[in-house]
Amino acid sequence: MKTITTLTNKIISIAMLLAILGIMDSCTKSADNPYSSGGNTGGTGNKGGPGTNEVWIQGMAFSPASITVTAGTTITWTNKDAVVHTVTSDTNLFDSGSVSTNGTFSHTFATSGTYPYHCTIHPSMTATVVVN
Ligand SMILES: [Cu+2]
Image (tube, helix red, strand yellow):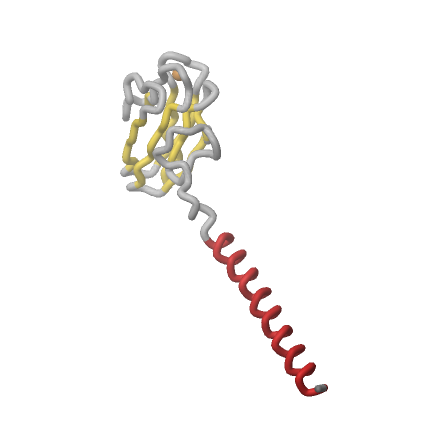
């Protein structure tokens, strides 16, 4: 009888250990891949925030106001506002023209430098792309 009890205890211990390992494993997976839930790239909702190499035009502002990328990176802007905006380079390097609600504009930055830009409709909306 005592032997059976000891064996049962061992089985319970092993089961609990496996359960704990299982919990740890699932935590590690979610920590390793924070964007595994799909992210917001290309989405039309306003929840979450812009993904990698992505700028949201939201609340009459560019978010993030300063984005840093490596040369050759394509940045995509998405208009999350109900009004039309533009993504216009201060130095005429790029100009989106009118971007409507949920519309996007992309530009590839081939050369290192600092690239300030603005919205021509709302001149107070300014931001910067830094290319390393
Ligand atoms: Cu604007």
